[in-house]
Every structure is written in structure tokens, then in C-alpha cells.
Image (cartoon, one colour):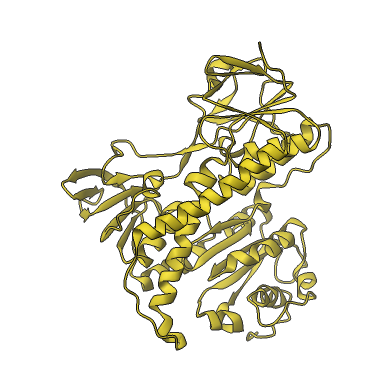
Length: 459
């Protein structure tokens, strides 16, 4: 017998389960198809376990540097088994809570590999489920490079998260978000780290100012970054990996990690065979995230754009409300906040300066150095906040980009998102009161300066 729920969701990651939860709240019957565990990459192989490692690395740095604060202690190294026990414990607790929410919302979960057949029908290991609507949320996979065979001491982020050995030397192919986060963690754990990046700068999708700030901080930490450098081949010999670069140079390392981005997981889901329009593997959607098949939608990493869990959440909620007959507002891609959990952290929202100049022509910018912020000095962090306004210095335009580098700046990104998403002007933000002493004051100070009213700054 064919099941016929109101909604079939193919994939139980961030976008998929968010869509399922919201649809159930709105009174729809929902069947969620997932071949592994609800929570997807973010909970089990991405956001949560990596950030647990990031926090362990932060603790290691704090213990190592405690004498600067007058706290005596000894750093005796990393207990890798306990680090992974801690990481896995965090994941297990969140997964248990998520399972409880699935039950609470009355969502039917079908475990197995789902393939879309067309006509709003999904096949799960021979069982057909037809919904009034279908949401495709099959997520992404860790990419590799041609000629790079994953295995042994050549890994992606997936294998890295279960590997307990802390290498003395590690090389990372790719200086994007995943690459620099793992570089930061391994450096804190005591490894010698080399990043190999084909583009001219690290985190190339971020503002150029941000890249310079991170590169400077990494150099001070002893992390080597070889930019404008391409990988040619890698050979594992015993306990060593030999990497050849396009310059002809060779790097010997104990572990090589490929961090060259994530691809859309659409090849094994029946989408092309069913006639769903694809572009470079990504599902083509309209302004309602609907595919070229009526009543079939796509959310998350299989939709071209930022591959972020919170983007998937938002898209899942949007589609659920649209299917339920509501009129939801879809957030603009540029208004989605972005955070990179390195030491120091990177947080941004809106356009880069180059993007703003391309769109608006004249722009004005300001950088507020965290050296002038009391809480940042207490924390011992360097960095700054860059604000970009549309229009020349003599004009009154909205803030279109905020870029921050420094310890804990991820905690400031929500206010920055409100500023950009609502098109606030610098003088409007300058009127807000920020508690003292907080790092949020630095965000206020940057807007004061851009409004021509600098307080704790020369100008």
C-alpha cells in the first residue's frame, strides 16, 4: 500500500527536519525519510562536533596562556580520547533531544535510502510514499580533488572527526571555512600546520580586510599559509604523505586533509532520472524554492548558495509555511549571517566592500580596531569591526555590510544582521545604547565613527 501524507521530506538534516517540524506545527501530516540519523551532517559530522573541537582547542589555549592572567597551571598536552568522548557526548545529547522532538511533533520517520521517482513519489528501498508535496533536502558531501585518493593518512573532514591521532605535522588543502577552522584547532592542539590554497588569499569569500586580519593572526600563531599555490599530487609512504605543488616544491606531512568545499548530494537520489532540473549538481528552484516539478521543493545545501545550517533551517521553515498556504518572507541571501570559528573568530553579514562597490558604486567604510574596546583588551584579543555603507562619505545611506574579526565576535552577529537586514543607517545605530564593558560597544563605536561622531577613536 502506498502511503499518502501531506508532505514527504527526503533528508533529515537541518533543512529537512526544520521543514518537517514546522509543517507538523501547521497541521500537516509529515513523513521524513532519512537513511542515517536525523540531524544530518550538521549534528553528526559538521557544525556541532567541529565546534566541540574548537572549544576544546580554546580551553587548551587558555590553560597554556593562563600565566598571563596570573593563573598558575601546567599544560600537559591533549588527551585525545577524552576530547572525542566530550565531542561525542555533546552530539549524543543533542541527538536524543532531536529524537524527542520528532516524536513530539508526531512525525513518521522512515529509515532507508530514498529516491525521488517523479509525480511527488519517493521510493524507500522498494516502498513508495506519495505526498501532496515533496521537499528535497538530501544535503551535501565532502568534495575531493581529481587524482587525490581519500584513505589512510589522506582524509576529508568526515574522517578527521573520528580520527583520534593528533599529527605532529598536518597539511590542509583549502583555505576556506572548513580548512581554516581545522587549521586553528590543530595549531591549538600542538600540530605544525600548513594550508595550501589555490586562490590568492584565505577565506576568499570574505572581505579582503578580513582575509588580511586572519592571515596576520595565523602567522603570529605559527600557521603557514601558501596561497596562490595548487596541489599536483599526494603520495602516502608509510607514516608520511608527500605532497607535490605546482611550483615543484614538496611538502612532507603526517596527515593531509582535503578541505575543498562540499558538493550537493543529488547524484544518488533519482533527481536527474526523474527530470528535476539541475545545474552543476544543484537543484534549480524559483523564488518559492519550488523545482520544475509542481509541488516539489528543495532546501539546504542542494540549492546553490551559502552552505550553512541556519540557511537550511530558514529555507525549511519558509517552504513549510508556503506549502501550508501562508505568505512567508524569504530572507535575502546577503542577510544571512556567516561565522568562521577560528582563533580569532570571523563573523560577517551583507556585502563585502568589493561587492558593495559593484552594486552601489560609491560606498564609505570604517574599521574600528578592537584595541579601543575595553572588553576585548580584557580578553586579550586583537581584530576589528568593518562597516560598509552605501553612498559616499557626504551621503546618508544604509549599512550594507558588517565584517568582524576577534575573539567571540560570533556573539555580535545577530545585531549586525538586524542592522543590515533592516537597512539601518549609521546614525540610527549610533543612537542605540550598548552595555559597558562589552564587545558590542565596538559595533556601536564603528557606527558612531561612520556617522561622523567617533568617540573612542581619533577622527
